[in-house]
Image (cartoon, rainbow, N blue to C red):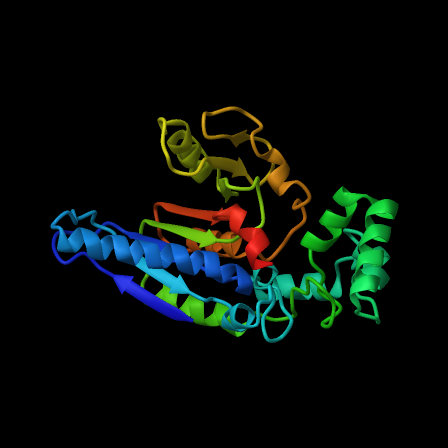
Length: 291
């Protein structure tokens, strides 16, 4: 994991913008490209004398899950999905020891999701059986909700906080991220329409802010953007049309341990006045090339 910290050289500072990539390993290549672009734009602006002070500290966190990134995996070295692992000890205790392991139907699908034989024909056969028997909505809900009882299985959330989260939490504490105004943007790929940047937030204030920002965009050559509330209650597209992306987060209603919610709770436990945590799936069109 690499962390780059860029502080204003003059004038007062008023909080931070944090940009993280690679929580889901292989998805880090898209986030890394964005971070390289940001640094290049800062360099160009400085050389051309166009770098205006914005009063913010910029923190770029590269490869939160370095093992998954280098091995082209979503999961880490312990087969843990880090975006289902950002939990407190009492939450792990509940999910591991008390919650029904079949609450989202994962146990029903276990034999097909985790077959003993891992050949391409068997995988294709199992995929057809899954969709034909259960339907895509039920399968999606079962897998994205994760499971906390089978360490060797797909979408395993772990039974303790993983080292990547421990390191990142300490970095944020050292930088006092949770004690000041902050926006954390966590980059992912795979959700939302192809070619559309999708902003997902569970924070109502952040949703209102980013929805207004998206609707205020005029004609642009930039990729379209949508803003989606994590409860699927509303979605605002590039031109403000309602319902533009509500399907993006459908099926995620009982998901636990996502990094954005974890950081939001950390903020709520601090003295910070303003905090926006958003989950940014990034350039979704890159998904096919990455996975």
